[in-house]
Length: 118
Image 1 (tube, rainbow, N blue to C red):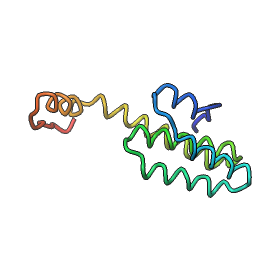
Image 2 (cartoon, one colour; image 1 turned 120 degrees about the vertical axis):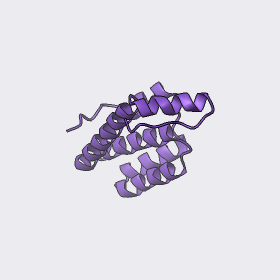
Image 3 (cartoon, rainbow, N blue to C red; image 1 turned 60 degrees about the vertical axis):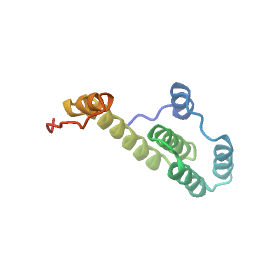
């Protein structure tokens, strides 16, 4: 089971240099305080769909899980944090394979990669 951090949104955004859209965050927080958490989570779904890179999508999903936690929906928040933990773990494992190293090397050398399935 994933441990829910105290303020994952602020610490993740600070360490990445990515700024979450303040207008959408404020609107989502207002909806949560008004008892409309499901609508607030929908705002995050729209932000994820329009995000331009994987890091932005990941950080928005962290903020979405944090909002679910703050709204008191602990089962949803816990499931979201667990999924994010698994995703981060898989990404770190993929980054250490021989094929990943070959892909980066081939890209820099402007040639087609030769993968070995490892």
